[in-house]
Image (cartoon, rainbow, N blue to C red; front, side, top):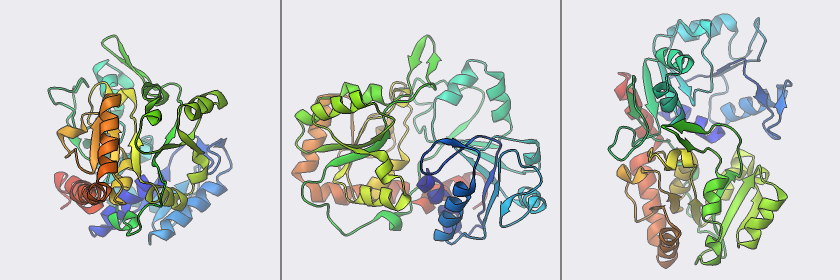
Length: 370
């Protein structure tokens, strides 16, 4: 999630904008290392400060602690924050992570960047008045669901216009001349099981937890030409044992919790093999992963369960989609057959379709900023 934020704000900065990062929320905080709920926010502020400084934005962040109404931390005070809202050309709400509050009413142009499509659209189609009221506050709605509105997409699109966008990536942060070490695997980083967030549309439930998809391909490593590895969290000992028995390499996701370690893990991998959540697969939303674009930018081929993204992105060289085990195996074999070509193609796809300046630049042009 840290990389997701940095790619957006630095993409804007590289286009010449004066970019600020703001957390002005009363939502529960999670410790940046343990991910446990916490009311002690010093570790969060330290992490935020370090990350902003690492990209040259040490004087461009503001943090207001939940439940604290008379002060904030960072580059300005509450009066300065209000002026910032009032004077900003646009304010982006990435992931909808920031709930809208009365002090946000002064914002002239409010943009929602939806990174997880489907749930909002289904809520609107089901007549969820609270969700409709929330979305009515935005001037523009963008979504990673690039296939929304296409003939093969089952996601209902009612009331609002959703503009397609993609996860951006700063290419220079990920590109590397180093080749993966001998014996490296196709990897991915994931939480095994989630509860809640399932949606129901026309009597059909679309599940959120990723373990359902992994279980469909549980035996894949036993037939795969290349090793498969999961950096995984939120998994029981029994489920981890099941994966190992079927040939999966397993490392704990907490071992890649630091942003730099996460980057090293991706760049040290042979490529990515990953499934996607049923909620984006079943309705063919066109969603694409912000993690997968990092693999591509590192010149690491990506083999990803089909969400309909092939309608917008080139597949078959450097990037593969699959729906069945045989299709997944064929893609793995193709990567193994000519790794150098697929590595080069992966980077070319990242540059052509996901480069941060290009992706956020397209958003800015759409809303009249460029």
